[in-house]
Image 1: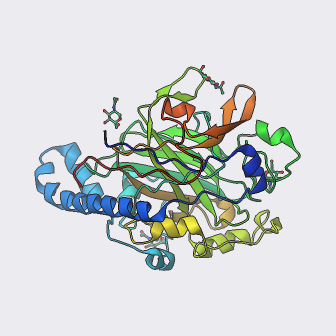
Image 2: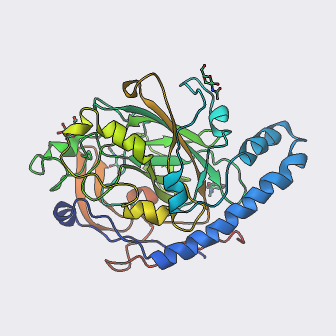
Image 3: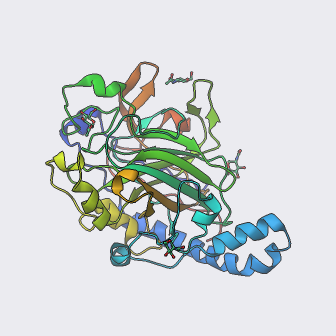
Length: 368
Ligand SMILES: *[C@@H]1O[C@H](CO)[C@@H](O)[C@H](O)[C@H]1NC(C)=O
Ligand SMILES: *[C@@H]1O[C@H](CO)[C@@H](O)[C@H](O)[C@H]1NC(C)=O
Ligand SMILES: *[C@@H]1O[C@H](CO)[C@@H](O)[C@H](O)[C@H]1NC(C)=O
Ligand SMILES: *[C@@H]1O[C@H](CO)[C@@H](O)[C@H](O)[C@H]1NC(C)=O
């Protein structure tokens, strides 16, 4: 088996409470090796898009898909390129624009898997794509598209698990110092801005969410965990399957400043950490093809009308991660759990081998 588990520092709830803004550090040398490996896969993918074009046209559906994906940009970007690229699209998309139109845009870039779950994942979340609830701020419609890096085809029936903080930097379902009022355990009954959604035949899942605020030490970001081959239970949660991707997605810095100037974002007195200063942003963008910044358009004349954001995520399906979690969503709310390297959604991934550094990164078996 060419599967290793990328385990993360298993944060106990007490540790989360002590260092709410602290997220785990990956072994960057291993991560870079993995990303280089994946880069070769993306290069192959780019060639495949070109080479398959003619033959694929013989079959209508394949031709359509191939045409769509060939337009994706797979060129290498480094941190400076990503930082200096505006992800504001000049297309006139609305909520009724079709997925295929949005994802055929040349500005769509491919993100490679990277692997950092952070301490705020609540495992076992409900399947739902409208996660906004009553949170005030800039509403966002987020379209995530997942493609298989070895075949360049969309991944259908993948469950994307996503979470982010509210406009004043607080996560639902997690109690701790620095995450809102740490003495208020009613937060454990909250589910805002968390949800799990299934991809369609285009590999696309669309969430209604909020432009996140910020908290100490981190730039504005969304989290994603991808579940494959998971089974939907009658109580609308997942069991089983595997996790081939863990990642974080970002927004352009100028847009962040614009949003942060509006209420209620501007009531947050915590210092802003910029993309440039953010460790995870840097890890995800250095020396790779990765551009983990969401493309976007305004959905109206002003921010209050909301934003449409989208990104294509290339996944190495042979990778298998075992994300850690400190909280589990149960029938009585979010419950703190300790020392988990395995995850109930991921059935039997194994406990972390030690409580500090990652033990490895996945190695692909797809010959790239
Ligand atoms: C978007 O709409 C504006 C105003 O109607 C138009 O000038 C512009 O060309 C459109 N952009 C695209 C990419 O169609
Ligand atoms: C963010 O969530 C916390 C916890 O529920 C809440 O106290 C706070 O008011 C929320 N922020 C806004 C702007 O509503
Ligand atoms: C798991 O999902 C992948 C991607 O959809 C699929 O190719 C594979 O056949 C599935 N495996 C099983 C055991 O169902
Ligand atoms: C859903 O059902 C599973 C399996 O019985 C259980 O482990 C889990 O706690 C349930 N989740 C909720 C939110 O009720």
